[in-house]
Amino acid sequence: MDDETVERVRAIICSIPPGSVLAYGDVAARAGLRSARQVGRLLSEDGHDLPWHRVLRASGTPAPHIAHEQLARLRAEGVLAKDGRVPMREYRWAD
DNA sequence: ACTATGACAAGGT
DNA sequence: GACCTTGCCATAG
Image 1 (cartoon, rainbow, N blue to C red):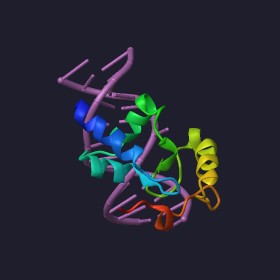
Image 2 (spheres, chains in turn purple, brown, blue):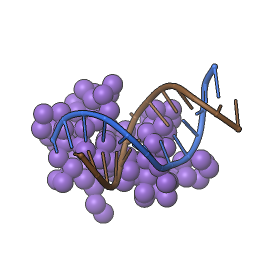
Image 3 (cartoon, rainbow, N blue to C red):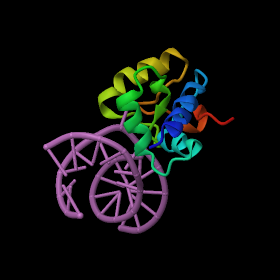
Image 4 (cartoon, rainbow, N blue to C red):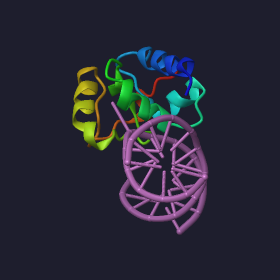
């Protein structure tokens, strides 16, 4: 993991507009990473100052330990989850 | 060097 | 849709 790549990931996550979301894999792809786990690891370690709540799994289900907080924050931005799951088809950020 | 673990994903059943 | 198996890659022991 070069610092340059880390910066790219951080930049991408920061640029996600409120009301939109991205999957870990999407962020990874845009940042040039080969594995989505890298993104998750980054957030767990160095993502405390980023809008991490706009990043979730490809299926629209957030990670278990943060699920409650995540859905609450998204709900505050207008992202409505259906039974703990966000409909990516509608909220997925495409620029 | 090897194994286990983790904010994951894709493909098969 | 749900569930299981593989692949993935950095870190920790």
